[in-house]
Image 1: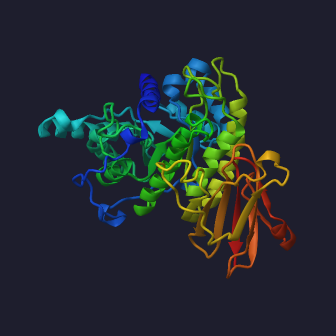
Image 2 (image 1 turned 180 degrees about the vertical axis):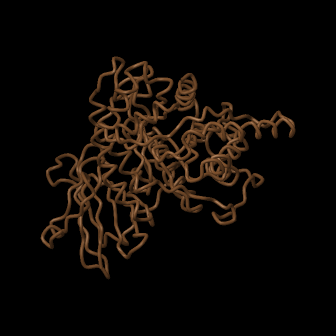
Image 3 (image 1 turned 45 degrees about the horizontal axis):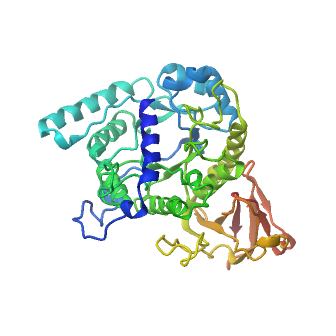
Length: 471
C-alpha cells in the first residue's frame, strides 16, 4: 500500500514542479536506444486475447492489502459485480478467486514479484535474480494456471526502463508456465519524469515514445496498459496544457499498440487524487471511458475503488457506496456493452476537433483531425438556444473501426464538452446501405430510419454514440 501512496505523491509533486519543457525532448540528437524498424513479427510478440469475448472492466485495487480495511472481501467483490465490473480487483489467494467466481467475475492474481534495478549489479548477480524470478513465477502460478476465472497475473505497476530486464523474464515465465494467461503490467503516463527533468527520472528515457518502444522491444509484452489522470488534474480539461497531455498519451499509446499489433487498456481517475480536485461527475467518468473506447482500448480500469486517504471514492471510509459508485456503475455498464461489441472490430482511424487553437496555445501539440471516412459529410452543432455560447465551436472525437471478420464499418462519436450537448449529422458512406445505432445499455442494434438520419443525433456531454454501417 505504501507504494501506491508514494506514486501518487510523487506524481502530484511532479505536476506542480515540472513544466512541459522539462518533460519534453530538448531537441538534441540522441543515440538510438531501440530499433525503429522492429515489428510484431520480428519481436515474436504474442498479443493477449481476452476469453469468451470478455471486455475487462475493473477497479485498480489490491484486495489482499486493502479489502478488510473498509469492508469484508466478500462484500467488496459482491459490490464490484454490482458496479458493472467484469473482473474483481487484484486477488492474492484461492479465497479471492472463489469469491470472484461466486459473483460471476474473473480476476487477475497477484504474483508478489520482486523486480530489480540491474544498473549496479554484475552479470552474475543479474542472472541469479532472473533465475529466481523464473522459479517464483513457476511456483506462484501452479494453483491457478488452469483456472478460467484467473485471466492473468499482476507483475508490476509503473516500471522505469531499469526494471525491464526483470520484467521480460517474468513475462516469459508466465507464457511458459501459464500459457494463455496475461502477464499484467501497467505503465507510467507521459507526464512521468524523463531524463533531463529537474527531478529524478521515473521513465529513464528522454521521451515517452522511447519509453514505450523500449518496453515493447525489451519486455515483449502481450498488451499495453497505462494510466492518465489529466482529465481530473486539468479541472475537466479547462487547463489546456494538462488537457493536451491526456490526448498526447492516448494517441501515442494507441500508435505504439497498433504498430506492434497489441491491444491496449486504459486506467482513468475515479476519485479525487489531488487535494483541490472537484468531485467526479458522470461526465468525467464518461469522458475518460468514451475517449478510450473511441481510440480502440480493449480494457477499462479505474483508480481507485477504496479511498486510501483520498476523497470521493466509490466506497467510502465506512465501507458505504457513494455517488461515485453510482456513476462508476452506470459508465461500467456502458463500457461493457460497447467494449464487448467493438471486440469484433479493429480501430482504423482516430481524430478530433481542436480543443484549443494554435493562437491560444502555440506551444501545445495539435492532434489528427476528425476522420470522415465512415461518417460522411459530418457536421456538428450546439443547441440553437445556447445563448451566450451560441457561437462556440462544438468539439468532438471520432474513432473509426472495421469489422475483423466481415465488411461492416463503425464509428464512435464522442462529445468533448463537459457542459453542452452536441448534435451531429452525417450521410451513409458510399457502398453502404444501412446504418444502425448500438445501444450503450446492452450492445443491441437499432436500425436508423431516413427521417432519423436526416434529423441527426444528440450526444450528451462526455458521452458518445456508436454507429455501424452495412452494405
